[in-house]
Image: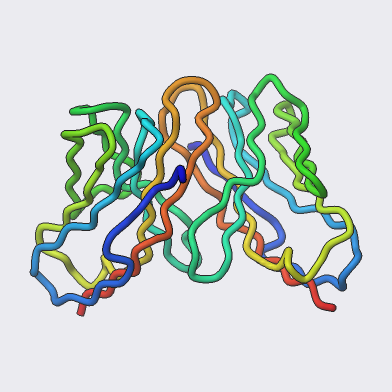
Length: 112
Length: 113
C-alpha cells in the first residue's frame, strides 16, 4: 500500500533556528512530491514541487530534497520566523495512479 | 487572479438533507479533485476528474457524488448527508500536463447534525 508519513507530528522552535521537516513514503516509483503549508482554518498553499527526476528545489528560505531510493524527502527552513508557524504537509503522486496521497503533517510553531 | 473558489465556506445542515458544494477554477485546469480533512487522518481524496465527463473514485468516495459537465466546475454532492461526513472539504485543481502542481480552494467546513 502506498503511504506517506511525516515525523514529527509537532515541532516548537525559537525564532532564528534552521530546521528540517521529514516526509517518508513507501514505494520509490513516485511521479512527484509536493510540499504545502496550511494555516489554521485555511486552505493549502503550495510551497515546492519536486519531480521524480530532481534532487531538490529551492524557494527563498525553503529547500526541499528528494531521495527516492530511501523513500524520503526533507523540507529545510532556514532562519525560521514566527510567520513560518503553520502545518506543513507533503503529498506524493505515484506513476501508477492519478491520486495524490498526503501525509498527516507537521505542526510547526516558531516562538519569538 | 488565478484561483479555486468554493461555496459555501461554512454549512450546517441536518441528516438526510441533500446538499451541493460548488467548486470552480479559472486556470483552465484539466484535473480537479475533492478532499476531506479530519483530525488525525489528514487529507483524503474523495473523487477526482481528469477531464470533462471523466471522474474516478478516490480513497473515501462512499456517500458522495460528483459531476464534471464543464471544465471549470466540479461540484460535490451529498445526497443524504450523515454526521460522519462532518469535515473540512477542499477542492483542488492542477494542469493535467506537466508538473501537476495542485492548487487548493479555501475549504468548506461542513457540519451535519
